[in-house]
Structure formats: structure tokens, C-alpha cells
Image 1 (tube, rainbow, N blue to C red):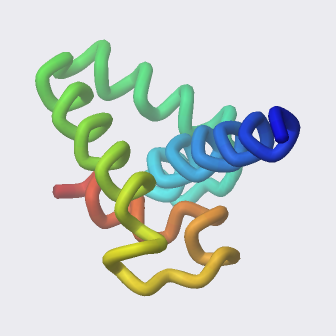
Image 2 (cartoon, rainbow, N blue to C red):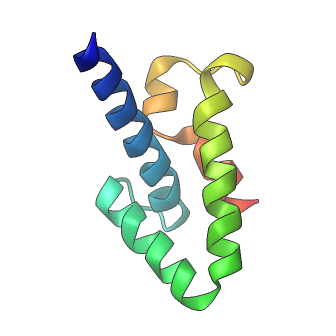
Length: 84
């Protein structure tokens, strides 16, 4: 049971970071970490708002936005919320 929960949180974190990476036309979670760090260095409030939007997209994406599992894992819905 704990392995399932741990893997779900890892997938959610990866989708969250991939959403940030896609803003810079990249696709790896480490790139997303660099993108959010760069945004935070220039504008901390924008980084906080983008993080909030990405969190909502990850939490609500599969249930309310009708994303399949692959789309959710790749952070496709998160990209839009990061930009907003």
C-alpha cells in the first residue's frame, strides 16, 4: 500500500516539474526545477503563482479535466496553468 502511495506522489511531483519544463520547451523534471528557480530569481510572486496553478492542475487534472493517465504524468495540463 505504501509503495502505491509513494509512486503516486513521485508521479505527481514529476508531472508538476515537467509542467514547468515545458514552458521552456524542455521535458525533464530537472529542467522544470531549473525553470522555476529562474522564475523565482526574477519574480518570486510569479513563481509562487505558477507553483499554485501547477499544483491545482496536478491535483484536479485527472478528475475534472478528463486527462488520461499518460497526459497527466507528462504534465500536459500543468503547462497551461504555469503559464497563466
